[in-house]
Length: 300
Image 1 (tube, rainbow, N blue to C red):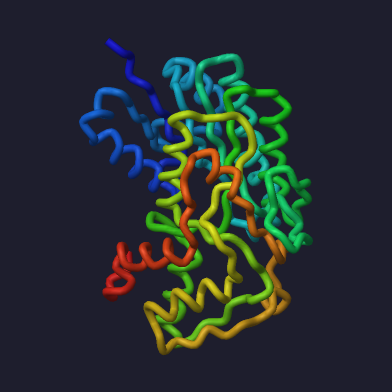
Image 2 (image 1 turned 180 degrees about the horizontal axis):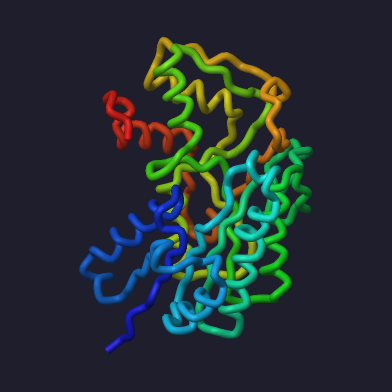
């Protein structure tokens, strides 16, 4: 009788984590998978991942085959005023996980960000491009990447993603639609361009990747690119067609953290590896709005 594979999902209640949990549970529900996988998604009460002694004990006792690390400090502006917290979540935690799996059968999938780049390119960033973050958040995520790479792991993948939205947490699309609903108009920056990514798509691709994982850094985003203003305009067109979305410049926001002006990620290598077409951000956005009630006036 084959041993069940054990999957440990850290941060299973967050934006990405909840989509990963949904995708894994969907797979486990299939008759051909039910006897193959055991999924654990410990809550903060069950496991404080920042208690590294407790984390070490938990992982060593469990001996998982696969770990998805969705725990991160993702509040970009707040990170500027609490860099130690950002580093604790984004550098120290992945480093500890890397140390725990080194030399074991456990494969670690860790997530990073487009904000590791400075935005000076005019063409999509590849995994081989040199990072140069502009803000504390980006620097902390890069520090986590470097900590893992310094361990020279053969059982770890870093998946960089960008502009994540979806159910289960705060996200830009939902926020902008809320502004349109309350104010009848919105103001959104038009001088930052990136790769909007639907959390359900990222979860599906992540689970597919984990069936036959490879070590390295990969860019995993929906295809196409757009400004924040363009993304907001498309969402508003579908949900609040009478709501004007006015373009503004980043400087007008006076935000604490500096964002890259261009952080589009090249996902072609990952798509080729999986043998899949990573669908366009516009198609993914339409599905999100329709599936979660925005188009029917009962957004979740």
